[in-house]
Amino acid sequence: MANFRKNIPVQKPNQPASERVKIQKISNQSLLKLDKTTLLWLGVLLLVTFLCFSNALNNNFLEWDDTSYIHENKAIQKLDYQHVKEIFTSFYMANYHPLTSLSYAVEYSIVGTKSTFLYHIDNVLLHLLNLLLVFFLFRLVTGKNWVGLIMAALFALHPTRVESVAWISERKDVLYTFFFLLSLLLYQKFSTSGKKLSDKNYLLAIVFFLLSLMSKSAAVTLPVVFLLFDYLNKRKFTTASILEKLPFFALSVVFGILALKSQTEAINDLPDYSILNRFLLLNFTVLKYIYLAFVPIGLSGLHPYPAIVNGSLPLEYNIAPIFLLAIISAVIYSFRKTRVVIFGVLFFMVTISLVLQVLPVGGAILSERYTYVPYLGLYFIMAWYAAMYIEEKGKSFSSVKPFVSAALGILLVIYGFTTYSRNRVWKEDLSLWDDVIATYPNTAYTAYLDRGKAKLDKKDIKGAYEDYSISLALKPDYFKALINRGLLKYDSGNIQGAMADYDKGIAAKPDYHVGYLNRAVAKMQLNDNDGAMIDLNKALASEPNLIEAIFNRGTVKFRKKDIQGALADYRKVLEINPGYTITYNKLGIVYFNQGDKETACREWKTGMDLGNETCKENWEQICK
Image (cartoon, rainbow, N blue to C red; front, side, top):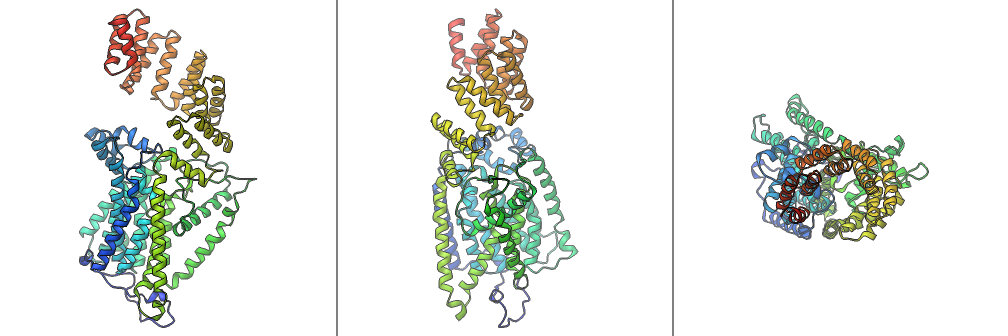
């Protein structure tokens, strides 16, 4: 096959060492043929990678997205035509990734939510397959086994992989990458074969690209990556080479539009940051991603935005452009000497570009899961030069070969142990948020909220209250912490204290439906039915099918003698969720108070048959 080193002239003594690496061509037909040594190393890498992730196989479901993607996602809970249709025709959690949701549906049909093992083992197996694809792809591109092996090892064991592999909700990362790499591999075979567009490799590349897009929208960068591979292969840019990519660019545009449409509500506004500060944030984020690729220290499930003090960001943000400019200068300087660095850096930048928070989505300045594919570009640079010293013969190479091999081995051991250790961080919500807070104790105000919720799940009410209060000390107008702390006050009997927190929370976020719902319940406790009705209607203006609000509005209407209105609300609750069985008790009470004992008993009997204990008690006392 053709490769990016073909037609290289005879080397002169003063040419850089990076250009003296011998390229061994690998034909498409011999792609899977490996010598025993390479096969042994690949087998060892697969085993070591599995062992490094083995302690993640029994991690729990996390409240952070796992609950939404698995427990609360009605579309995945039946594997029939209607549910599959819903998966492919609707957005979920501000995303369009039907293939990922379908994979959950298959797992749910087998184990439901009784066990997490199947969900986790599938993530790990996909990661192992991706490891193999990385090896074969870059072995094909360079003709060098060691480049493929080193790249696969760095990709497989780097600690930033943990977030994508050990977190069930990040199935989309490992799944889209599987099809992304398959499409790349087939494109590489096609583009170096000289065959026409009817070639099966080309057609399959389109199919796998589509599957990648349906797994995660981040795959839209693949056509640009094709251009980078053409550059690496020293392939001429012709009309034909551009036309062959049109189907890929067309699919990217379609799924890019879908992604923008699905994430409209998830795009955040950052009013506290000026244009200059946003520029500094962008520079710092790129630099931080590069830093973590080589020195994975300070890892965290959440990297929050920094606090602004006196209108300025911390020092490291202000000096980030200087260091980034130095890196850019070094990359430009390498342009005339080698294509390796340019290719690796551009691969990284192209694939990371969509998540650099130019349009902020979520509450993090960067996320380790976003590096799953982009780091391949940086690994390529590392693997290329490491392989050069490991494989080449001659005095200049032999003298440093042991040091390069030892350094690489030590680095991979450190990566592997760190990965194994960080899997435990993702064991449960409490350990996850403990780790985030340990890394960012003064800025991760959302982590205190989430740790508070985790403590509340463990019945640690005092600990939850303290965490909500710390969150508010860091960000006094954080509406979610205000509403959650208000609920704890309400449950403890401090109704006025709860109302004060609810008022502040609603003032900070006037369209937050949970705030109106909780304040309405407090007003109902204070017999302020008119005020409760106003709040419930405001909650329903934001969330029309919020059954708790409809249910409570029915109760307020009953109190206000609006019998038909109460019955209509209770019936609507059951239309939305037939399993909300306490509604049958309310229906029975309404009818009984109207003197219709027969209908009341019928409602209580229905609720009793569905397992509602209150309905059973009323039926036995009044109707039996």
